[in-house]
Each structure stands twice: as structure tokens, then as C-alpha cells.
Length: 360
Length: 183
Image 1 (cartoon, rainbow over the protein chains, first blue to last red):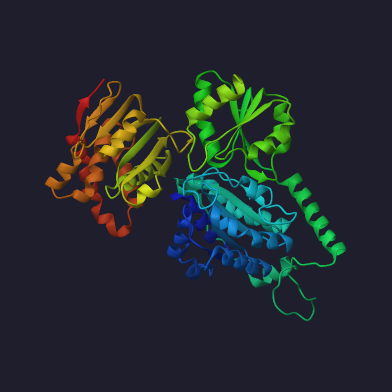
Image 2 (spheres, rainbow over the protein chains, first blue to last red):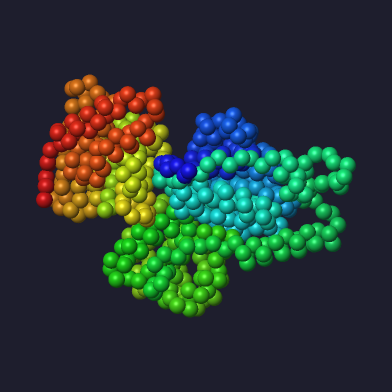
């Protein structure tokens, strides 16, 4: 039985973690995502499902606790906002290097530095282009509603375990703070130790004389072996790019112009589409759901059909670079955004389309 | 039907909870809803506001700059949001503490002396429900039975005994609201 609730995006993340049977949450509070830890503490899942909820001493500690839990084949996660996520980058690189699954949620606020607590999307580069050192990627999901905040916790763990790689939910202050209707699922049991032992031979699950030692590390001083590690990881990423691209198209069938936007910006663009269509402007929306792997192919196809695209982001222009790569300069592509915690209005977005793309 | 509302006042006036009860009641009546609060430094003392959208369709942007209705409960919010009402839209305000009354001629303006009424009958905690009652008189988007269900859902069970008082406050609001300038 699905239950309907009115929830904040942050609360939906926490509720989903409990109901999808997550084993451990390690985090440190920071606005605008503190409701995640608050909701978990209030719900006390350690009494219901045995899920560990721990306020760590710092973000660095949180991500390394995640590293440890992931090494044991457990479903573990942490959440933070931009400055806290920056602190976690070393750990994320190690987890990717050790090929372990986990979930990290970033409810983005305006930067750089401590910046502001208001919404922003300026962590796109950090999330999709690396963040930490070395050749690795984060499987990145961008929810645009409270329902997706809930659903993507399940999806992120599914993908993280399928590819043995960290997954990130890249949200922002709007989707974290807004309350919407959300359908929540039944409680799923946590995985048993037997299931983990059987399903994940890479996991460190205790001494067993019939099995070789499991060594979890991202260190390999022999370069020829380290190159093989990199090749294996890159092959995995190619498979992920071939199979896991997700996006939503709205009003694209007859569109002459396309907004490209994710998360809360995609919601603002939907309003801008209504306003534009009232004025007779045929505009649609391509909403990337996976930011990595990025929906390049469909954008390339759309570039053969439409006259121009506007990448709308609450940043100085980050995703627009991927839109430009995907559309290969066949059509006019521009960026529009506000930053530092300012949310663009639908009217501003439509005006930007009219001046930068249609009249530009 | 889509109704885009801003509710704005001081922290502690019940601005956010009024919006939450409206949103929960919307869900009970099978509507799409969104509730987007201000969560910045202002929430830690000072002004507080929330954007509530109730619709029959999927809601696009939860963040808006113009509204069908503005419910304004202090002067700072009047200065900020009077200009944000769509032409032909509605502005409801409590004159308590207002030093400059609304001046627009292209919208419907209603006054509700909820602060005075709530103090007079000793239900100052239900001030926000009086205001909500005033709103529902002119925008009857939620029926009473669904308001009751919304209250049941949004209030913790230990407060359920207060639901009749809440509904009474809503009824009082619909009686005391009066036109200030109408089209």
C-alpha cells in the first residue's frame, strides 16, 4: 500500500533511506539539509530496522565512515551541502578508486566558500567533472520534485551497487525545502549478512578459510596494475553511459526552442514554457535526470530539429558546456542563470529566451 | 484551477503552519500542492513567508514572483508583496500594525482584523486560522470536510481535540473579513 504524505524534500530523503532498508547514515548538519539528520533522529530507525544513524564529528569523518560501511557491502550514505561536500572529496575519490558503492546527497547552496544558505546549482562542475582527484565519475541523479527525492534514494543505491561506484543525488535548497505530495513505499528489509556474502564477493564480510583475503584499497604502487584498474573503471563507465542515461522531455514535439534545465530550474522552466506558449512561442524542456551520464545523444538529435537552446542553471554557466559539446555548435546555445542564492523567476527565464536566443 | 498564494508576516504568527494546513487539506481534496517557505536568515527572527500552490494539474515552479492572492500580516510584507499580486488578483491584510494601507486599484483588497478578534475572544493562537477563514470565503478552493481532514493530518494527534476550535476560527474569519477596495 502506497501512503500519501506532505513532506519536505529533505524529509523524503530521510524517510526513503529508512524504507529502502539502508544500513547506515553518517552525517554532519548544515543548512539547507539539516532536516535529513533531524528526521532520521526523530524516526529512530535503529529501533525499527536496525539502521545506524550517527552524527559524525565532521564531514571528513562522515565520508570515511561511509567508506568503511561500503567496504562491508552495506548500503550506507551521507548527506551535506556544498561546503561540506567539498570536505568529502578526498573520501569520494578513494571510494571510487576502491570501487565501492555508496550514496552521497548534496543539497546545494550558493558559493564559493561558505557563501549563502540559499539555493544554487553551482556544484555541477564539482559533481560531474571530478571534484576529487583522479579519473573517476559520480553517477549523478538530479531530482526535480519531492517524489523524486524519495524515489532516487532507491535508484541511486541500485546504480551504485550495479556499477560499484559512488552515486550522488544533486539537489538544491528549493527541492530540499519545498513540501509536496509524496507517495511513500512499504518498509523493505535490510539485506542480511548471508545475502551480502552471496551477492557481493568483493565485500569484506569476515574471515573465511575457503575464500582469499579481501583487500579494500585504492592504492596500487605498480603502475601497470594501476593502469589496469583505470581501464576496468573506464569500461564500467562506458557501460553506464550506454545504459543509464535518463531524461524527461516536456512540450518538445512541436518545439522550435528548448530549455535545458535540471532540478528546481527545470520546474521554473515549466512555468516559463506556459508563459511562452501563451505568447505563441513554441518552447519545450529537456530535463536531464542523470547529469552523469549526461543525455548528450538526445540533445544532439534535438539540435537537428530546433532553432536554439537555452541552458538555465542557478550558476554562472556550467551545464551549458555539456550542452555545447552535445549540440556541436549546430544551433545557437546560450546560458541564463542567477547565482549566489538568487532564484530566477519564470518571467526572467522567458525574457532570456526571447533576447538571447530568439532575438539574439 | 490553479491558485498561487503568498502568505507573509512575522515569524511566530503561524504563517508557515497556515500554509501547511492549506496544503494538507488540498491533498485531502485530491489536489496537487506545493509549499515553499523562506528559510533564510529571516526565519531566525523577523519576517517569514511561504508560497502555497493548489492546483488540479501538475505544479510547475514552486517559486514564484507574482501571485493570485497575497495574505499580508505585517508592514514589511506589505511593502514587499503588494506589488506582486497579479492584476485582478486578491490581497488580504490584517490592519493591525499597518502604517501604509495598500494603494493598488487593479486588485481586490480585503481587510481582516484577525489580531484584534483573536485577542478579544481569547484565541490568539488561532489567529492564523481566522485569517485562513477569510481567505476561504472569497477563494472557496477547499471544502470544509477536507479542511477538517487536512487539520487531522497536519496536527499531531495530541492536538486533535483542538480541531473543532480551529474550524470555529475559520468560520469566524469568514464572518469578519470585509472589502477594502473591490473591482
